Figure 1: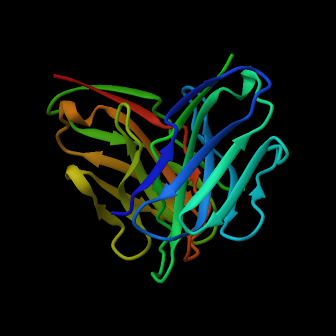
Figure 2 (figure 1 turned 180 degrees about the horizontal axis):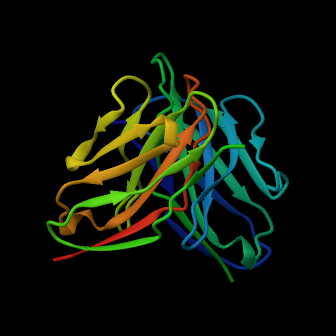
Figure 3 (figure 1 turned 30 degrees about the vertical axis):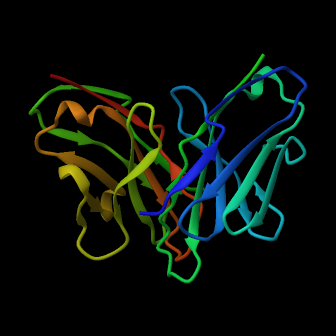
Length: 119
Length: 115
């Protein structure tokens, strides 16, 4: 199946710094990527949808200036948490779908997740 | 708005016991339904999916799920669980359109299988 890889898998940073998380589709072209956030013992909450070459669409309540998303190519999307604070500590997961050249049936492929801890 | 409910938060079973995890969704239109599994320390993986046709769907590792439209349910079942099935299970639904769409996830059910 299609493989999605995230990097880094975990990161610790100081409050006020910015952190960039990468999401790559390794063996397919992803026209659409999704970023989720997962709190402990809770479900995945969709943060934003990014389409290659256009601005991301953010879900209600997600600060677009704080969570910057860039989808510059068909195989890479990045999430930058700007001026991170301890409450931003969470597990961030990306997924990709919309296989270029293949009729997609809505199946998404998930990355391994990135655990962010802000001190 | 769509929502997905998983009523079992934590299920503990002995090996060889039968499993059924509940999933109910709220959406009036055509839906695609999924079950994902997250093994400890690993990423989400697709167990099975339903788009149309036979409402009884077979997935990997002996799992199956039945779509009951009248009950808005998509329960996951396995006749005999193994210790290796210990994981977090997520039910998800999207709006039934082709192409990549937003998935709405349930809160997940943690399954612990005791050897």
